[in-house]
Image (tube, rainbow, N blue to C red; front, top):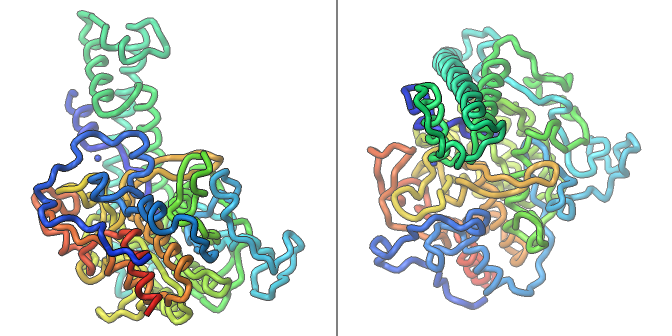
Length: 536
């Protein structure tokens, strides 16, 4: 399941309810005393907010990937090879102003003629494939297990426990958020009357003086919203409305045992039927923005005067629509990986995941197939603040602890501030099963209809790493996928600080304990190491 926009913060909820987040040497390495070196204490500028993941740890004291430094000092005017990166996600707005020139086109297929010109089994797959057809909303995997009613399923009891827990949680949230929303609507009406303006400002609110208790309570609520980053009560209403929409979708679709989301006509438990869906790789609705955001992190056209810069500059993005508003089907994921490999992708980005997997073997087989075909598979670690060494997150590349692929990279998420809060509170971690960390919190990128937005998740960290992998494969094309993975892991920065883990301030550990490499990805170092390995 893709990352969803964070709901209203708990602090705001509490306040509202109870009365008011090259031949060069590898030199981009922190000095020995970095733990005591001055840290960035000022707020990020607007430019830094839009580009922090590309900045440099030493020059900017921000845990970015040194992308700009890599372009300035290593890539410069070098010409690289075009690299196809498949984005298995929720669909991509392939007409976006910052992406339309970097979209892969299947030159062997004639558009819209209703024929399978290249004989790959997929008719009119011009820019990729859509395994969801016109589908959008879906159940979560553990709900599908329960809906089948097979109590002999070894995961049935765990699925039932998860369902009971989540259903109560989301019902509680609905009640809570409905209450907050009504309070904000009432306060907004009171303030509009008190100021005599339908569109009042912060200054208008601050100058209100009244002996009416309701007016003063409304003023206090608005001021608290302003202090938590809201520019207006209209913005607060919009945020609450968006949160309520997510909550209702979770209850009406994701957790609804009677909901039927599959519209493609195939049997998701039968891998023999492969050619379903259609060639429309775009999102079905504007809010289905996840895949477009991911694509922009990898390859939004650089330095064209538009909103965002991707990590990689020699990329063609293959769009494979597989991830619904709910949990992806294992069958769709397995076939998507194979489609990407068979149609020329050398890197695959998978910013999705789930805690239950009915046919995990199908997906592992596909990951193994990608590895055999020299393809890098970059996967988001997940956003449950948990240790994936002990609590599963699918897809994965291991069976009973033994890895079946040496080209699979699992990525945790960093936040834009070096120090104890460097690891994003939502990010999963694991000394065995997470490979590296990369920028993932508050990342600016493309969204549908020529728009841009900031999103956060390991979903954003994975494409950052996919972009670095694309740079390596572009400028050092003789390197194997397994070498690319090892370079990314070995060339990262091994930072020293103790960090808050899982957003729990009482759980503080050394950063090195949270992943196999113990490092954050660094594009500059990776390209230097790649040049040395390629020259051997």
